[in-house]
Image (cartoon, rainbow, N blue to C red; front, side, top):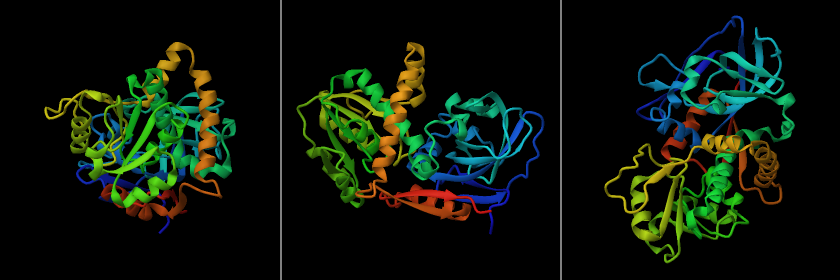
Length: 366
């Protein structure tokens, strides 16, 4: 069945449970634009958005009007199909933040040659970076041939890159060893790739099912299973780069390193929807939630944002090309057709049974 004016909602009680229902159609008023979603990625990052949907405001970005259900945000490419906003033409292709839905109505503001923002009041729940839509024709870094790796990694790599930038800016808080949980996640090995030339030892933590994949990346100095935390090398200042967000795992890591644990940087939550900085059982530093927007704001305040982005875009393209390198690709990209298939991917991600070696891209069927 074609995806015509439908949306895929997520249960707030079970992130793998979804509900497909009608949505729209939309007729724009003055200043409004209708975007037709073409392709989007689904990764553990989307589960993180759901996990922190109430705490950080992600559930508010695309309101459903239905108790118990939210729109799990995704990153994707869309086309302008209707426009009553000056400067935004029908047929223009954009990249940005979307609900899993066939179409999205936005109130366009801050319109420039490079893109626009959605001024809908509910979008104010999150930083402006989540509300901007980039016009591909004005994006010097856009490549139609790289849309699939871009839709998969662009929203993740900016987190990887800014997290590493933040840690470098603080001289890794004195650490000489970085332990990365959920090492098979795209944000984790994106961070590892960024740290490739830094003078720190990288240790990847992963589950038994993904261990061979993580070892095959060659991005970490060494790889350990979650059952081997108590065997991790000690006696060296250590930083915990946490992509798992698992409270029990965090306690074990903290207890094992003790006073040698210098900082706990919580970047994601692939394995938990809990987060508290005041865990009475936790030894050592409180976990600090990392927000990419905070790093970008710091560059803006210092007047270094333009230089940051110039280097970032060059490094991002190099990373895209690395992950799909025909000679030794890190992942294989699999296209799924329609919102029904998207529901199955979400279920696998929420259950933690998705294949780390695959990158899921969903194409809307019309």
